[in-house]
Length: 516
Image (tube, rainbow, N blue to C red; front, top):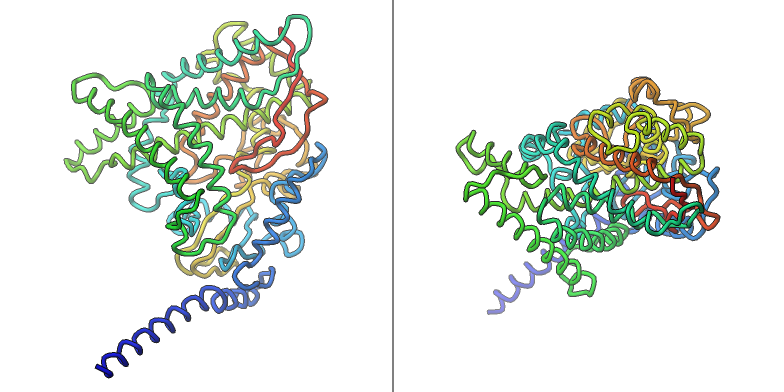
């Protein structure tokens, strides 16, 4: 009996020692080894601090930056990604820092970007160690390898130009509802202060509800509100150290995040089940995102004769969640910053309106006309350059890899600060911080001189599949707004861009609206 007790005690001590070693290696030895490796390879960066790395300083810099607004002439990177900017100014364009015990290398060189975005099988999408962050939206944006290739093939038809043409009525209807509300509020012959930001968010969510689920868009509204709440929780989780197992703790936040996920899953699955039953009953699939996706998925299964080649219902739910989050966020922020920039540069507002009226008059915008909008397109591109939807992109290395002159070990997070690439004077010239839509007179390729330096929708094989959808919706909305209103900044407007995944105006966008 005593011998058995000794064996059990020895096993327990061994397990404890192994676990202790793993924790020490994770929290100290591995980070210090990597720090030495980076320095030997010519990289500069911040010395590692036990467990937290640079997280405390990063969090403090964000809180401090958000505490006060800025002038239009100030560098918005200093407000959006202050710690990254300071790190690059101090240690160079390719430098390292620490998110807890996880090493981060900042990448801004266009040649490095080209290789990272092209070799999507080597440089994988960033994943957060906290599994709770995955509740917001997974889908095509976050899966890898063969599963990504399969999903991309199935989803491609959803965003084909011919399919998007059938979604124009949904764009028009959602925008018309917003503008009708504005016309009721804004009196004739005088200006009226209106915060356009909440209305643009509602309008773009209505577009997604209608284009994603068609006749089921009322249920879709519920998904939008829940996704919005989930995003706030996910951002908070993303800025803190994840302690393995903490997601199982019955905290108020953890419980609410799981409740939201359950409600979203139930709502979307109900919509999908109704649609599948209708398809089985012989009804033709509808020209909304869900209908096209289910039809494309069915064709893929029939082509190969196996369900394994298609997407599961869980996969379809994930893609619907992603439609909602990415589709609504991208277009709403593009529209609000476009309107603000057109207030600051009224000569471009006049030019854009003249183009819209020349092509459409006061008639309903159509696809052929939207494709002919050159000045409006230039303005939207320049807005995407100055206010890219995502201020940063993340990638990671699964194995040791050579990125041109940089030797990168496995398990390194690569942060691409979009905002710094878009404002780089070496790429864009001394006027990089200025609003100059004429940069894009001859298109994106000419403006970037063939470099990978304009990445609002990412780049390469994993470029945002919905970029044509976002641009078409934005052109429709801006055209309809310009047909009916002129606008200028209200004296109460406070310039305070801040990142809630995408770049939002912290204090809204109060504009003085004039009915035309």
